[in-house]
Length: 393
Ligand SMILES: Nc1nc2c(ncn2[C@@H]2O[C@H](COP(=O)(O)OP(=O)(O)OP(=O)(O)O)[C@@H](O)[C@H]2O)c(=O)[nH]1
Ligand SMILES: [Mg+2]
Image 1 (cartoon, rainbow, N blue to C red):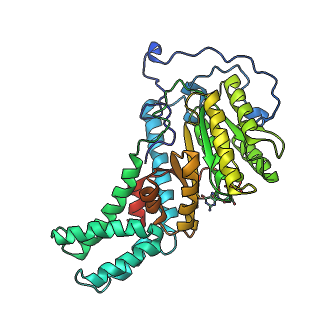
Image 2: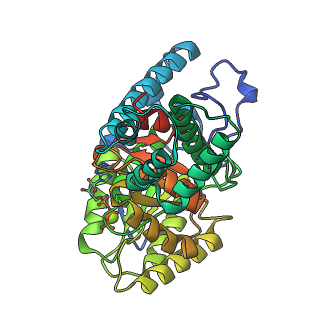
Image 3: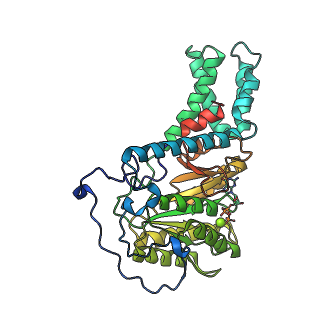
């Protein structure tokens, strides 16, 4: 499973403890003085705020969670153990999805000896029922039929393996799409702006809380922007997450133009030397075209203030909504310039195939998966592991 947040290009925890001091990156100049902000800045509880003037550097030395008293080997071992634990939780979450694809496939395969048209028809039904969707299923079946015709698929085991491989190919192909990710954006850019979009209730705010926690834990200064000013409770909900994770939040009163909140947040992020700005957006407005127009305006504001911003626009999709979620996603793709997907609620009764449908039909990588409501219930989406989990191995 990949690293969660790879802004630092090093493969591991990048403490650089065993490198000579001059090899470490230069510390940029300290941030300009903070102007008195118009907006409300909700600061995290006192004990979690760093009091000393902190230069806007990504120096891992600021990050105590990484354990500066440990050697590189110990840190790598710790990281590996964490990865393993996360992998296990990911598998458990995906395995819990009802109507798992593997069970259904087993039903189709049970008692059969050979591949025939009836079996292929049933397979088609199973894949569509698992939320893989019609176009993607037809594509998979076409590949399978070709394999059968070429005598590359001769028995049921080979057929099952071919389907598994095809699902993996689809997920991995979308991963390779040349979309923005924090590794492709020049490191000097600050703040790195992440916009989180999606219809209401899919898990945007929760995902922001989880992301903020994790990105901060990896040694970055994070700021959250509460640009969902439509719903009264939205900002409060985000404030709870901000406090929980010890990440400051910029908010204004309900009804304020979200682009104005974003503008203030960008200014504040620059003034404070924040490295990452995570922007919450509304999932619902008076009507859909309002929502889309608002997102477009926010993107324009971001680009004006910070080069290339937003650098990442993550569309949150609730896995349980299945094909419906895919339809919603299409609407967002048209205007929001989405660069990746966060697939939430994989721990619920989702039918696993939706990840494959999204990858194939939207041609976007699934970056993260939500596997619960708690702050550490967000994992990097790993195609290989996902497909293995779907097939119960
Ligand atoms: N089981 C589970 N629940 C989740 C997950 N992510 C979010 N939720 C829950 O989904 C509900 C909605 O989440 P929010 O984060 O408020 O969703 P939102 O997209 O911000 O909603 P709006 O602000 O109304 O647009 C909450 O009850 C969350 O706890 C997940 O990965 N698994
Ligand atoms: Mg929300």
